[in-house]
Image (cartoon, rainbow, N blue to C red; front, side, top):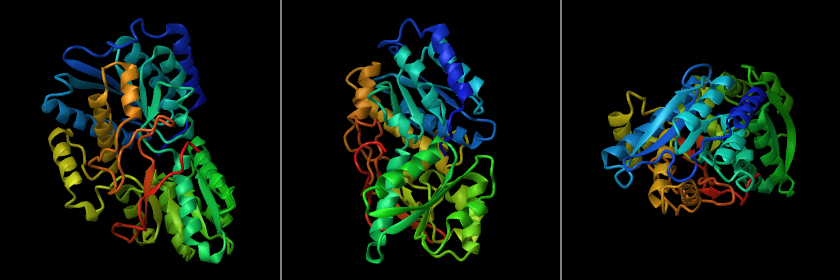
Length: 404
């Protein structure tokens, strides 16, 4: 789940940029020695979003595997991963420490931090890689040092709208209702639906939002669910999503209910929702290790072996661990293809990665650089949950070019 940054975090980081001015040595060799590539990360390892700390664990497990194999041209990758508990002041302090004291080569961050840290890291000329789907992070023209691992949220919701329009083609325009969290992530998801419906191929139905603190969205379901609604496209997560899935089933809803890909975990959401989860849809790009269809998948067998050896006790069935591992794969691919170990060369390598298969990506989806958005994942597999596994619905679909 991508959480919107608070104004406090934005202000704290901007104060750091003004007061500290960035490191004196920000080009080429910062964080790179003859034997080491030093990276910094800030993640919520404690606090309300502590489950996302597993992103750093999965990522570091892959780095350790690369180190065991000899590293990058003889250099070992070392990750300094700090806990911010998703607290604004701690996240700001972490970024300051990583850039100014630890002098890392690149910063990897989560949630709202990628948005509010951009100005500071542009000034410092330190590459920034965020676990976030916020559309604002696709603006690499304005922020040339910032890149993202997760797909653009608006691109995903446009793919959902296109699928629903094609599915409903024989019965007129699909009327798509939305329920989204009241933050930038939710607004981006709804905006992607709006962008597609503006083409005339579908129509935007009733829309509503819920607050991040809400755990029950049954009133929102009642607001958007009526006879004219052909599908509900949602960006809901946590306890609110579990209760939503259960309530929609209680209303005997038979039309598509789409879940956001970042909230499609079998372990975290579908199993707790029980039988009510049967029949929900999502636009997937990552394999869920808890899905039994991947039990003998070669990529996930390799992933599980590496997590077992280098994961420091992490649960290999946790899709968040797999997500971090996937970023580790992508980042190492960029390091290996970079012409030299400088910030600009690394960013250029990320943007021009050739089609590359990763252990954790859905079949038919490859990593491929995109200098226009800085996002290497732009394809999705529409799937329907059969109560045990995600069943593909048609072929892999590519998002329309550009950010939403």
